[in-house]
Image (cartoon, rainbow, N blue to C red; front, top):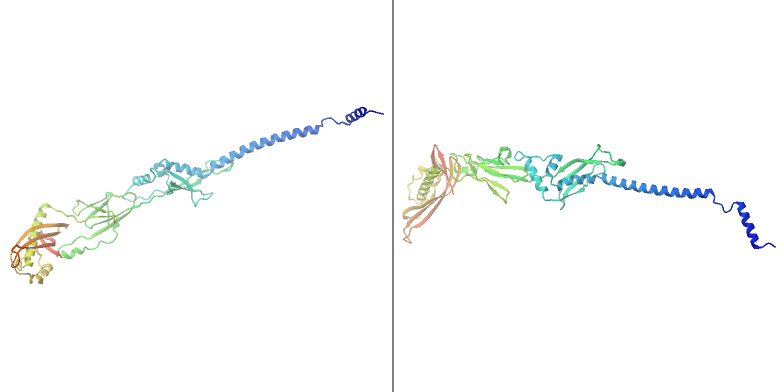
Length: 385
């Protein structure tokens, strides 16, 4: 009977004959292939990651936002020359300003401010548009981009360039001036003509006191719009002399009034004449001057003189004694032209009454008189009551 060892030895011998225990070539090939495939996959993944990373970087770099940011940088650098030179259309400038004024205006909007860009609502993939805003959200400009065909980007991405820069300017200043039509008005040194009138010049209501001997100029109202800077407004009177131009902040308007002074010698002569007239007028009303005492002060055929003589209050004036004129003064003067001057003339009658106090009663007369010059001589054209 064979032992167990003999059987095992015989089985091992039989397996060797059958090829068992040898490494097969296919297995070796398979293992090698798997190793190579794993390496290829790893290499491909690495290359793909590089590709994807590069693709993403190129894509991000090609976004139009970056081009808009480059333009916005000029705003943050306060580069006024760049903004001005690249504006799609320059602001319209009136004949009263120049481009430097507009540049100063743009500088005032840009200086000391920080800007950001954000995509506009109207932006599309093919026509990207961006706003330039201040940090507090005020839109000052709009950037429209265009395809830059001079550049070729990887992966067929589109290159962008600045296509149109619109800077939002607003000419917020305007000038409103009222002045006598015989005066000349200037804005920033340039004279206003009739094209700047807001309406036809109306005849002065004061002409009722000087007609038919003279004419008081009407008031012309001018307006200038479209200014980028608060203007300098000046005026010259009818003689060509500089005159006052007063600004009213409440109405945002300028007023040029008639001048209040004229030749000293002539003013002194007319002032004396005016006080004499006012004194005679007061005495005439109180019946202390003759019926024809006023005639020499009025032009021949004066309706104003006829009205004064018809004044019934003169006939009812209280009886009194001695009258003395004192404290004559010129309280106001307005010079309308060489031939028309208004004066407010004040005199006091010291009138001794027949009753009451022994002290004279003081009767003031405040006359508003329009004097007209006819053939070189002054007359009373009218009195404003």
